[in-house]
Image (cartoon, rainbow, N blue to C red; front, top):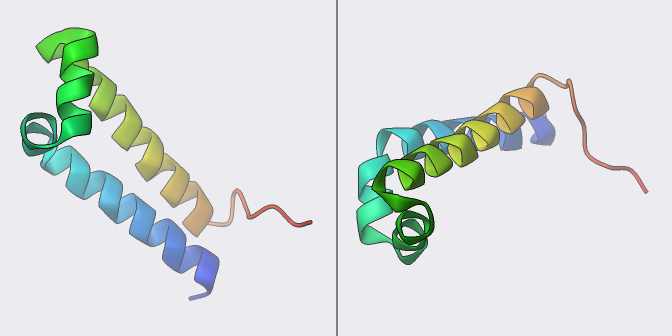
Length: 72
């Protein structure tokens, strides 16, 4: 497993853990309360889900070498 696959796997896991703990994230963190304030209780939940799904999808794509790091 190379570094890119490790980082992608960790991002996918963190996105999944965040999805599992979304209630806690919305209630106990300042960013979660801000999302709830901006979008309301239901909208904040969907905004967080979309963000976490994006993180997990990015991690999966990175780990499977579909996307790669930028090379300068």
